[in-house]
Length: 124
Image (cartoon, rainbow, N blue to C red):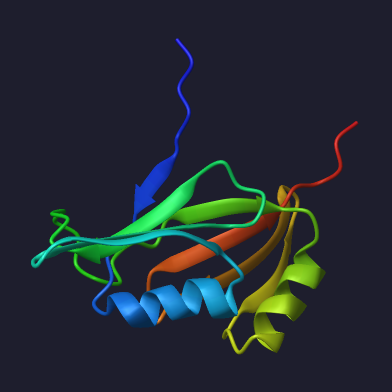
């Protein structure tokens, strides 16, 4: 059985603010922004090069409070470049944290949902 994770829901309090942050500051691609009904809006954005997108919106259900997701991790090619790019866009990114298992950059969205970006160590 092949399983491909394609979408992760991120709880946010302000959809427009979250979309602006992820698209304008983080460089994600805006895939969808659809008002399904008066009480439901679905926004999907994708990090450049990723097969997995994130979604947020209004009326989508879910039990997580905005800002409570602190376990999003993605792989990047260059931690120094990622840190510089995020900071240049006004993101309060932290790093580079050097570990034996990689180099890490962290940041949070306006609600406090936390991201970890990992540059994998060289492999033999």
